[in-house]
Length: 198
Image (cartoon, rainbow, N blue to C red; front, side, top):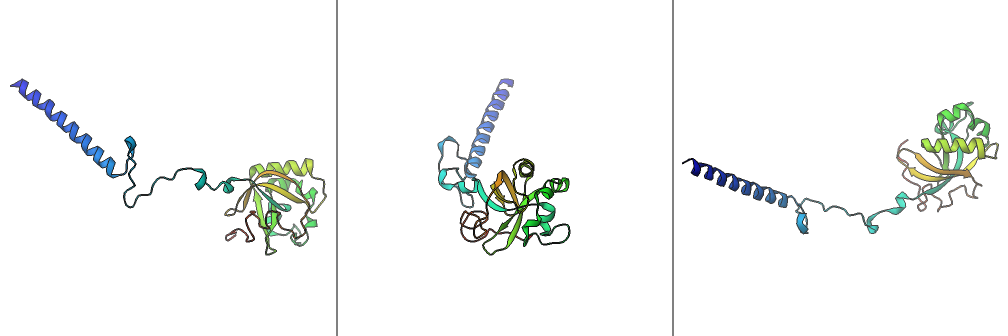
């Protein structure tokens, strides 16, 4: 009798294992599991996985852009005024190389004023690497004494008003005061980027 009970037990375990595999594979199939070459469309309410192919990647989003504007430290850039309350946007000659080389400016960080097509000036701060590049530029490569107009190459984040700087160099101001790339701070068309509430 013992032999027949253990044989029944093995058969029951085998049937239970087959039933479990069948149940699991049915559940996986119903959830859109595409193993084994199954290429059926996703069930309703499910989105197909997006494939990274050249036709659906916005390469321009990841490309370096050029921005032009007056170089300023973050303390003055956020307010648009110098320490004496004078408007540095209307008179950028108040922004001197000596001021930008000061410890206070280096501690505060740097940024630029970018002029939009509507003739408004918007301040964009630099990221950490941009501040280091700018410190090097101000102390080693800058030839102007004041009114330092620069060309910045980098990536712009319009939400945080930050530019990740790749390179910075002196530039001459264009006739209209806009960026060379189609007169828009981020280089796209005639409309300024969404600046958000700041």
